[in-house]
Image 1 (cartoon, rainbow, N blue to C red):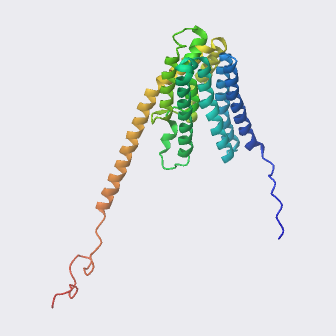
Image 2: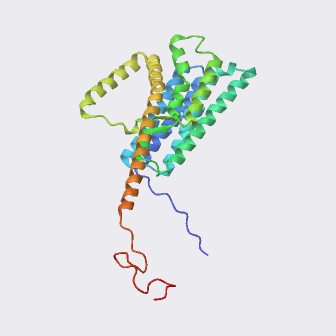
Image 3: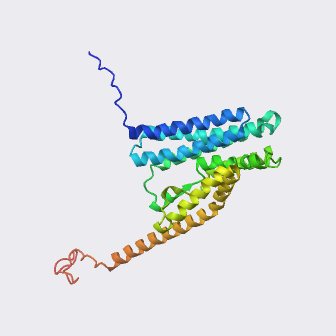
Length: 295
């Protein structure tokens, strides 16, 4: 019996390769943040995680733009997100302050593990939800829980503030441990948060949006830590608004479904009943049609 030669992989098109390259850059940035934390260079550690978040935002958009989405790319993206936004920020905070929590840093390490597990569960739930086509279209404007990149940024909030203020209060290991656990809880919660992937800007507001982006970039270049902290606080403030908007759309969808069911029931009731067996069109019994009756 002749064995078939092993099949070689064909050439990959650029539209499939480009998003994966961006994902690898994000992965390397996230892991480099851990190295910077080991060296005590926490400013560069925060910047490395921010860079990972930037490229993570790009890879999905590039994949959709070039129509290069693939199962391999989705799996690689999940692994990159877990390491960059689940492991890296937790390790950065451990080397910064959590190593002082508990005897030998044991309690701080438990907090690190809890945050990483929450990130893994968050990503696993997100991946399984991608195959659910039964949800209404409007749910695509929301995430279920805080997404992993936002959770990573929020967990570093006190570190970012402390880079500018250098306050012992924000460097408290207990404060950061409680904060990390709260963010981890938000990641695996059912709280709806805004997804900005489907945001559409009206033509009359394009100029204002571009102006705002320019001012934001200028603020990031001149006061990066204050600007990042302000952006994260604004995101936290948006969560109650997203909950309210989600509940409003959910109620509207439920009312629409109830109205459709009522209309269907009314239409069914208005239809004439089919004549019974053994009856003529006027509903009168035909002679000799009733069983058991002698004529």
